[in-house]
Length: 336
Ligand SMILES: *Cc1c(COP(=O)(O)O)cnc(C)c1O
Ligand code: SF4
Image: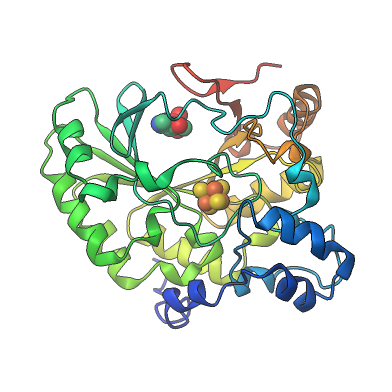
């Protein structure tokens, strides 16, 4: 039995960490002692999709390094404003797959709830960076049409809370949602897609852990970590607490040019995840979302890297290399 580590993991108030996040390109560039010439483009790109990054994450970046792999995930760049052929605002057909307010039902047996549009961090490559959350979040009508949809579709046995980031929602509201979901007999699994344990680890509160432990579903949490340096001591600590609450932990990451598209970085990521009791689940090719073309890694390069990864790691540490194609019945594996 691993001793509980309450108190060690949690500094006060995740709300505060979010409220104190950097949102001004100028402040971020000053704080990291970066070249001021980055500022005009950062401001222009941020006016399209805002800068947002909590301070603890920024403190993992190297000062003065404009190529830092954590920084590149959040710093607005001029390249985002260049329109690229083949890159669109709804690259994975989310609008067409909306089955009820805030429900995306694309795949057999599982339905995804857009619980909120909010996130603790704005990732520049986010495939939902243009998604009309204001009209599409399931919370709009207090989950009623989402719950009705789930209730009337007995083929659905897994509900996936996504967003945005579902852990932006307060524990008391999540608990209400869990109770309503528990009342739907054919649901057996609850999955939470969240970047919060990695970006704001103190979000994993004792109340949340208690809820996840108590709920009648088998619970999986799929975190989103793209680089081993994101797995700080505080992050590993809350991941351990989640495991101790009976949660199965997976990771999904995005293959991003200049951030993690090399063998050493991928091997370190998979091995560090396992150290932190997380199984690498998906390595996604970038969705072709407008504004993110500069992160794109070609299929040929991805396949080559993946082949090397298969050589280096035991099978259980190699994530599935996939991409999302509108209208398909599952994520599509990229074959070698
Ligand atoms: C990615 C996704 C899922 C989850 O797919 P899994 O292969 O089960 O991880 C479910 N619903 C939607 C709409 C998705 O985009
Ligand atoms: S945390 Fe996820 S949903 Fe939020 S901006 Fe990043 S990639 Fe997009």
